[in-house]
Length: 110
Length: 368
View 1 (tube, rainbow over the protein chains, first blue to last red):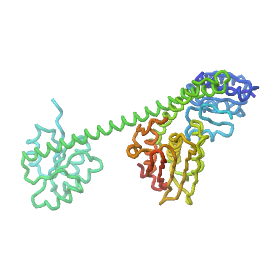
View 2 (tube, rainbow over the protein chains, first blue to last red; view 1 turned 180 degrees about the horizontal axis):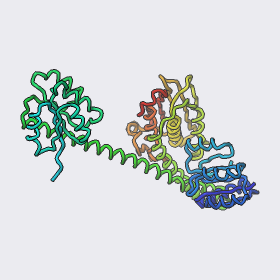
View 3 (cartoon, chains in turn cyan, green; view 1 turned 180 degrees about the vertical axis):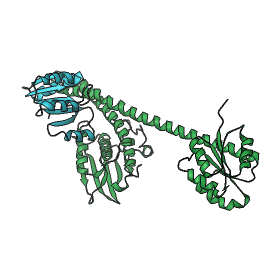
């Protein structure tokens, strides 16, 4: 399984990477601290199965990332993470379909 | 030289207009009109006029009529009526209808009129000043709220990073037995609870109410499972029973705030012995329901019970409260138009009883 992780906070990237590799030892993981870099890689056509993304990033929010990636690759699954998740966000994510889910940090892969 | 206050005088008799202006033009910026139409024209052109003096008798029209006409568009100017001696009875009703400040008997006496105009102007100035201060206060209050919310919300980001790191450290063999880790965790969780409380407080104040049927079982389960993350529940026997026979309509967010805080307190303030219990019950009440949360913990001394809901009040040095939880509960209960009471025996038990009324969406406009 290929997993990409993106968060402007490097510590959170590191935490998420460790959690993913513990839960899925055979997963191929790539990390980004800038959504633009992720988009550059995505443009080369080489896409993961799952993208774990922070919601509140400068330049592009998690939502924008979902929209932009789905334009070319609608099958990619997204797990959005946020320091605090309100009802409005849960509703919004629901409306994006079942390939997108949201969790309050810290990430829990149980 | 300061700008003169504007006053408007309305009289259908030309000589009166002239002598009024002559008497007062040095002191004030005098505007004149001889009928209702003229009066309206003047007020529209000079909305900053502070006092309007009108003769009651305006050749077929009345001064009171004029004041009633401009009430909606120009509520600020202070109104004075000049009336003949015989009209006094009609005046009382007119004063209420037209919001008239004073009436004076004709023919007017310059000194009395002067004094009356002066107090009218003082009243106008005081009102304006008060309105401005209120506006400034409201703006400052809103800004403060937003600031507190942003600050707290932004504080969560590094907090969750630390919580994530602590989780990693607990799972990592090399650090799992480090005694500092659980201590760091406790402090961080305490800080996190406090920050969440602040965010809850702000949201309780600002968030629109969303009325729905409340699923109490779901909310209680959620509260308990989210608290498991923060506190050790293995020693405590928590039971709940939802006995309502009718659906309860209220705001889910605020009920969550109430449940989370009260259950959290029940967990925190237990005694050291065995047999720790918490019982939660929801029963029908007159057009609503009664939520009771009872624990057999350290209890609350009588002298503390009164101040319990004050911000930052702490009745015990035991444990980990920030003192803001019950304050928020009280605020949330207020928002729901409910009420909360506490009953307690020191070292025996504590029971909180919250009355949650049904909120109909039809009278949602009545906000508190």
